[in-house]
Length: 240
Image (cartoon, rainbow, N blue to C red; front, side, top):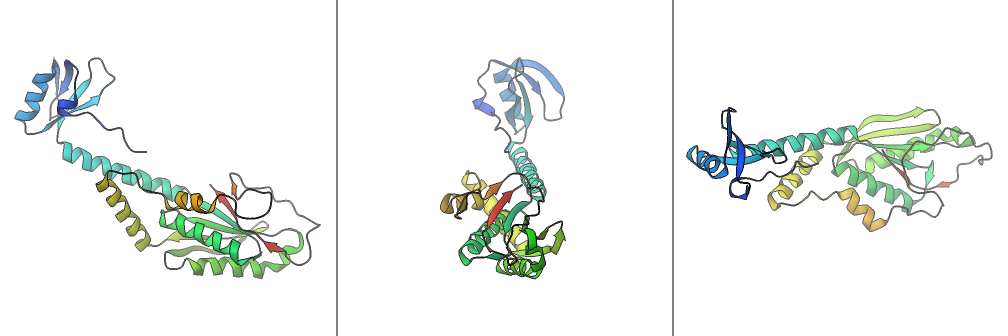
């Protein structure tokens, strides 16, 4: 979340402020015009760093340097949030072309937004005997986004689920950083490709009654009524 913009120089309209000079030393409570004059004499800016204090606290500093460091902090914060936020998508052992394409597009958007993506296949009942089909569909999806992603964890079993973990490549992250810089220069918020995609395709593209977006992992319950051969599957999505 971007830091709140601070008022500076003539934007500060209060009569008195508690002034901190460019060396971090407390000057005390002064008229705002005196604080502005001190900032101009130092060739720097006056920033209102604690607007809710009484009187507000203002500091003399280099606005350009402060803004650069602020952007760096915001960038690092976004990077940490993305690395901790693994997006989840779900497929069935046999998935139709249309559902596979929806899942591919979602994976592509998440990866371009800098997120890792965990794609899993859940085996129900006797579907567990067809693990090769699950592995094939996971590798097919990994190949479909191979230009922007690398396999961090190859298809592995976890209970009755098989999953693959995909991570954006270095070039993908560089392209994301360029998008962030362009948004900053334009003074706009970075557009999330995954959010934009959901507006285009909707959150639920399949014909079943289950939402594509799930907030918690479903319990591992074996469905003994499942057919011996895996049914045609649908693409579903978990957002962690």
